Image 1: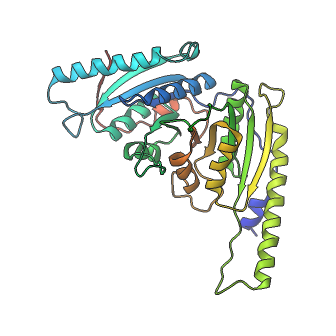
Image 2: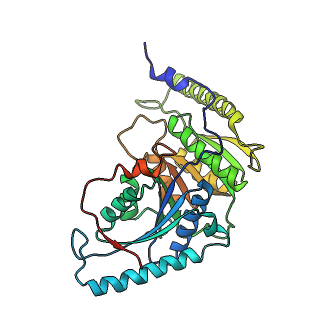
Image 3: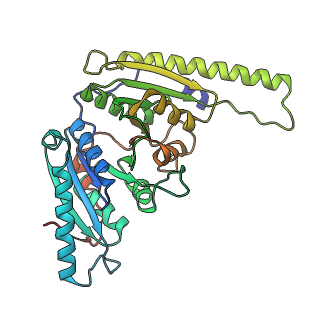
Length: 346
């Protein structure tokens, strides 16, 4: 007889590929015409360098038709050349050595409705990681993804990295990599990517298990038996989480390039808020998460925890989704048969 509880409680050492496995083959960065987009270009170049992946910088110019047909070819050509020069300038303005570490860098200017144009270009390029920027939002203090970034993040099949427009106030950029794990297959894929990045960057790797408080159904105030049951569940869940973290220890990257690694368990609150708080406490420069965790909801492309962290975290968030390591040719083969948006470079 199959039981979900037993399946979730089965513990074992994760089988992860070696550190020489490239998690991504092509990184596609959506670059807006704003100063804050420099951070998006730099983050995309760094993750491409970490993975030995090609880099694709793209911008969408507005078109006048639903298929992206521009009204005035002369105006379009002027705008296209200006956008291409701006993208080239951002590539040239990357920190010394970073652009040279990227094996292939392409620039593309698209025209049309932003979401369809980007989705088609992403698939056509065979990109398995999309990098998006997250601008300032209103009201202040409640950042969220914009409509275009959210639509793209929800629709693409591969992984997504969201880069906030501004760093944490008064804080220097961190170098440690924090990865959220919960024992699910999705989080094991995130651990694989985080381990590779930490090793290449010679950075600390922090494995974080955020354990929510168990909930019970009540009708009225809880009685002593309910309180005791909750305490036993809390103790049991923490014990299983600690065992899971200890089983992961053998695959930690000590001695293989990383400066060090740590295991951390936090409990007693909302997992989303606990992870965000741990990022600040650890001084992390990158948060790696899975698109979905161990929850039962499987019909969403992005789980609630990932959605919150992509929208609110103070550092770049890399959301791992789909099969890590798919080649550009495999991804490109999934391009939908539709009219291509207008495009071009200088």
